[in-house]
Amino acid sequence: MKPPALRTAVVGLLVAATLTGCALTPVAPQAATQCDPPAPPGVSQAAQAYANATHEALLDRIELSDTIAAQNMMMSLDDMRRAAEIDQAFLADVRAIRFPEGAAAPAQDFIAAVEAEDEFLLTAAAQDGWYGAHLAERGRLDEERGAASRALRDALGLPASGCRLTLP
Image (cartoon, rainbow, N blue to C red; front, side, top):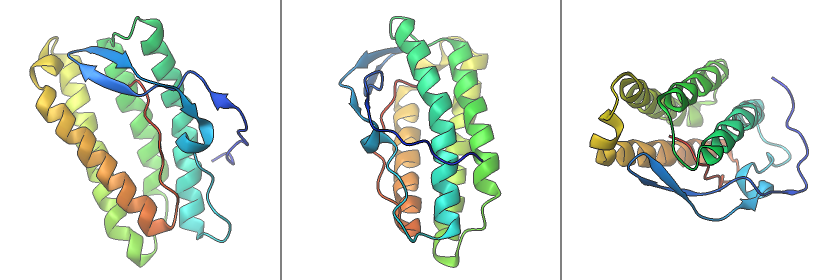
């Protein structure tokens, strides 16, 4: 894993999104420090490794977000597959981390939430129209992943991420 890069500028291309069918409506850009806050000094090796893994995945997620924005806020089936591919690389890094006892269960919950979301995306990518027909499930999975992420970050002593990208 590469160490996180220092970010001092506002990332203007990061946007929050509201799902509307398969179209996404941009909201507002946010500061990079809100999206990818650095690990505070003195955190465990597991916390630092998780922060590094999330940073590396974020770079790919920003690229995908930019791609969707360039497609007039419409995502393609390839975008769904790409989101799952990014997550698979991210999960490989997360699974390699030796989480301390208090973070092991939240880590497993987070991994399960990401896997469930990826299963949804891959099913949607294989069946045109499926995503739009299952928006309630998509919303539930997004909420579960967010809650699991917050619980894991809390267990590791990491600041909350305010990141909202334009993603499937």
